[in-house]
Length: 193
Length: 287
Image (tube, rainbow over all chains, first blue to last red; front, side, top):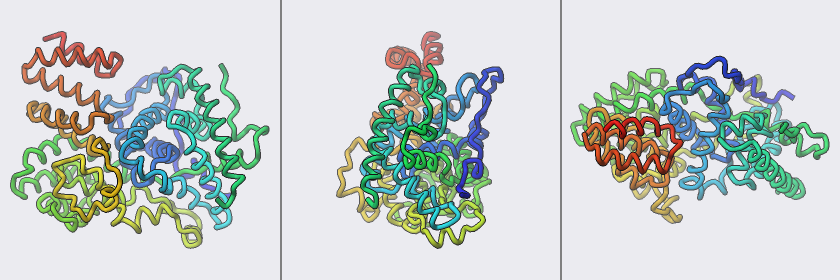
């Protein structure tokens, strides 16, 4: 199945995390290498497509305001994700709240790059189920779930970026998994919606 | 405390659940990084240009055109750069009509930020310019894919731009300065809905902050006024700390040290770990 792997559309940079290579990455460079990651993450948080670039811009503007990303102890991906969550939370609370519920998410479009209609339709259904199940989670749990389960970020990096204890990440993940599984089971039981 | 096994690789879970997560992890939205970067660069450069636009908001179209031209230089990477000046000028000069706003659809979104009145164009450009173009990724068989399965996102982003544009301009109600750009006809979606007065447009808030930041070095009084306005409009926004830190900076610049110190102390009490804390401490202690 020739699905669009992340590597196909741009690598998700891992960046050195040792802390040895301490340098400031300006936002342009950071944008080039991580904007897609942020856009993806925002989509998985349920931000509708037309708002994604606005929120990507805000995320990087915050970094710029802080003087760029210091490659010290945080991974750029989780660092950016932590900012994006904050911005996405506000967006959801305010302008987006009334629209999100009935609107197709960006995730709906992810399947469109599959090679055949059949595979595309299958993938689309998968993505839709995941998106809907994610909607059952509040933003805090959703962020942790997406970062760990979908993006594959380690819990300690998530904890560092979100500035919460590791135990908190584990407990949020635990609660998020339970809610996600429940929602997913409900969706698969009632297939065809 | 070691990490648990990811669900997508946990054989104890159902196949469908694992498969769904696996598919999700392997898919990505097609975000146009180049367009996004052009906008980002324009935004970053926007401080000074925004200041110009603010100061000359009531001036002649020619001076606005100057600001727009400057902005054009900063957005040289935008594909529509050549059409920018004229469109932006038209928008800033006559931004009372939807038609003018629509004319600016092709304008690099960042420019809209700089020209203050043309902020409406951002929503339009975002909706129709397609920074997010889900199906635009070159694929071996793109025709088959797009023909057989029209993407709902594509439809939304590109085909339905008029209605989407309306939706995107709704938050502009947060910005009194922009009222002329939003005609009643543009607001059919929002008006019947419960649009709370506290509704916040992240972009409007960002504009407010970027403009204030651009003004601060040369006209701290005007920057303060903008920041006060921002505090009123976006009291629960995402730039609360930034606005207050900048306001304190402006007070220091104006020599209003007592006020700066008082606000600095309040800030430090409220946000002791803020990234601005150290700077504020230094600024207010030294006066």
